[in-house]
Image (cartoon, rainbow, N blue to C red; front, side, top):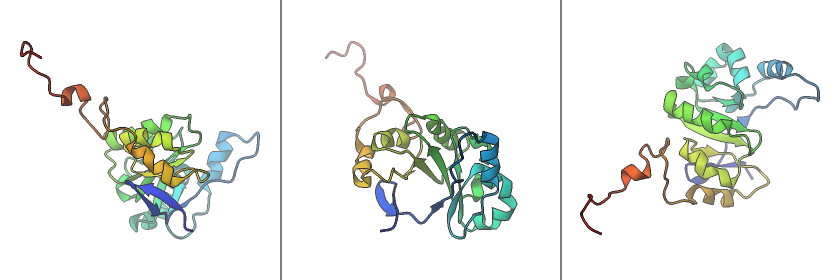
Length: 189
């Protein structure tokens, strides 16, 4: 069975390959890991590469990006602003959640949508669980690569767990108190 993701509010086949550096050995520095990501060989087909790989191989990957074959994924400590000038040529941007308790990806999504104007596919990858999907949707994610050991059908239900939101966000610019009609003072109950 082909790999599946949630895109929009549907379960669809995923035709992208996520490129990750091999697991670093204990004692490997962050600098060594970044260097390894920069020299990763990018296979043929539709590939989501780490930001470091994109930045190091941008010129070589530019024609593939223009053909819709390259996406970039951001790690929690990456800066989305590094993609500002490249966003128009990318097919998708993914944000990695290495642990479900790491919330930096929510800020990345909000910044990509609100500050950088990204309108393309924004995919959550990594330790993505049902309980996170509604909040991820609120900050701009529209595709979710959920953990393979969990039911994707069950995770899909996480997008509709709440019928109303109180706070403003990417998906609802006006908070509830501004959307709710109130009777004029003294109009009686």
